[in-house]
Image (cartoon, rainbow, N blue to C red; front, side, top):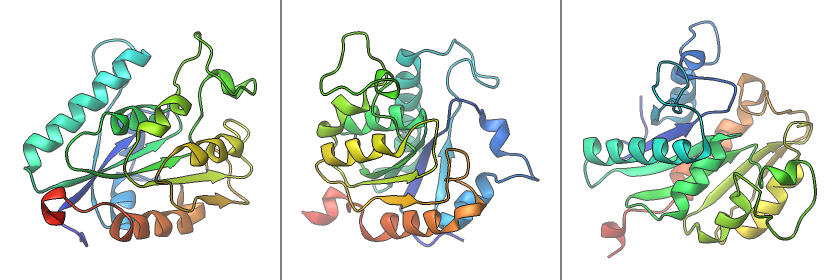
Length: 214
């Protein structure tokens, strides 16, 4: 089923779901996503979500993705390429992880990302000390290709957040803005063109392993 056996995706989900939401046979689930992207997919629950222990916090979502990334690296071996895919609040853990320059990272995909929490309510060129989820500050530290996808009708996280971030990522590729999509439908069967663009990005615009470059 998979077009590229050395590539896997680590998916970080939105705030309003847990893993159980993506295993529902009637709905749009992990099997559909994996088939559309022609890639194996890993996912994890945030602390305090689903049956995971602990409590939800910004600090814990960073620890959660670090643990998931470590598991993939150890279980898949040194030749695996890992792409991060974050949706909504999942873009925060995704950008955080990418800013740490982990081994084998080949690219990231951001679906409806936020620039930061306070920027949902106000415009700001500088980050306030009270701000949280600051993708805005970490974006310049990401050194792999970045694809951003956003719905033009998103009234939860406006498209302007993607536009701001695209300017700050050193290696941003052409973003995807879907006229009819909102925060919920941008990553659904209603807009399959988004998945086709992500698939093209994964197989044509992400980085090779460093050992293959040397």
